[in-house]
Image (cartoon, rainbow, N blue to C red):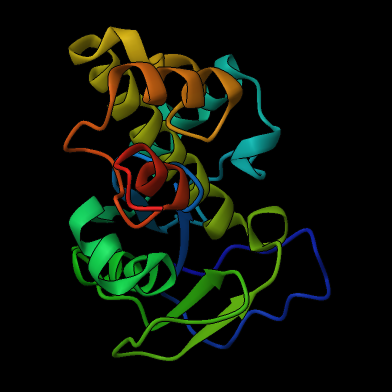
Length: 204
């Protein structure tokens, strides 16, 4: 379980063997959970092509998702629901989802890299890395797991509510999404504290 070497020399890996990376997907959408993933990679079973999930084609994303599932030492997914997002706000809900992902790892990491500029409260040391999904392999892997997981959930939601177009826009605030929201109204999966949803509910 020796640590993976990063391609970015400005990222200093601490002197621990078991290092996890954590990332989130879904802070911006109007609907659904914010989804996080925590991943511990195996330095003896490397995965080529890890990078920010937003920079990958759909085909490459799915391929890397499968490889991470096969080769990583440990993967866990955490989430916060729309109700929790409404109660806590999206930032605090994201921190909670990150905590849940780390807590659910079957191997406890000695150190955790977090994508972004702040860390959730954890039981081990951690470091926030801005643009970590481009700079730290473990975070890249976590971003891919989180994105594919959430995208698949949006496809499932699309099957239940095809008129909203969730499979296409994944819940993000696009023109087509605004039009569907205005026409068909608010379903339970919406984040009711988000401004466009409040507007649709007549609360603004």
